[in-house]
Image (cartoon, rainbow, N blue to C red; front, side):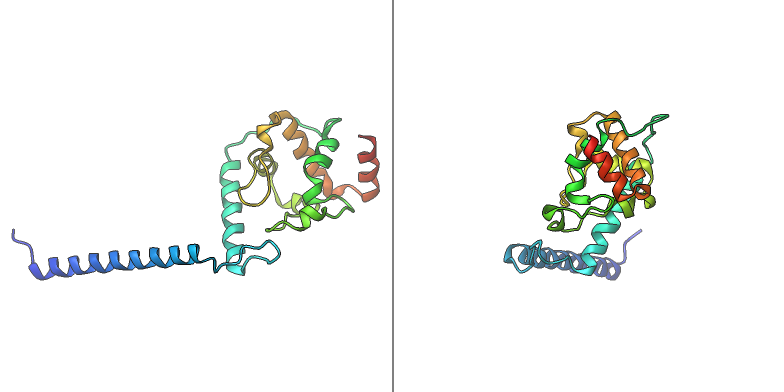
Amino acid sequence: MPSDPVATNKLKTAAVALLVVLLLVTAAGLAVIYSGLIDIAATRPHYAVTSWILQTTMEHSVERRAEAISPPPAYHAGSKTMHHYKEMCELCHGGPGKEPSEVGKGLRPQPPSLVKAAPELRDTEIFWVVKHGIRMTGMPAFGLTHPDAELWEVVALVRSLPSTSPREYDKTARTH
C-alpha cells in the first residue's frame, strides 16, 4: 500500500518544526543559565512559582518514598535525643519558644518550624527527611552518620514538640 506523500511531507515538516522549537528552548535555557541573569542570592526569597515547584516536588517525593517505610513497633525519645535535636535540628528549625539561629534564618528556602510542621507530617515522612535530607535546602542526610534507631528517637522528639511548652523544652534541654 503506497503512502500518501502529502501526509508524509506534513509529518516531516511537523517533526522538523518540533526539533527547531526544542533546540531554541534549549538554547534559550542555556543562555539564561550562563548569562548570570537569575539572582541566586539567599537574601532574596524565591519567586512564587519557584517556591511552589520546589515545595510541591519535595512534598510528593517525600510522601512517595515514606510509603515504603515501616516504622519499628515502638520508638521513644531516648536519653540522648534532646542532645541530638539541639546539635542537629534547633540551629535551623528552632524549638518550642526558640527561634532558629542566624544560620537557620539565612537559609533559602526557610526551614520549617518543626513545632508547627510536625502535626502535618507522618512519622515515616519525618524519618525519611531526617535520614536522607533534602537537596539544595541545607537539610543534611543524618542517615549517613546515625543508625536508624537514633533517627526514630528524633522522630519521636519532633512529634512531641507541638505539645511541649517552652519551659519544659528548656528544662529538658538543660538536663541533657
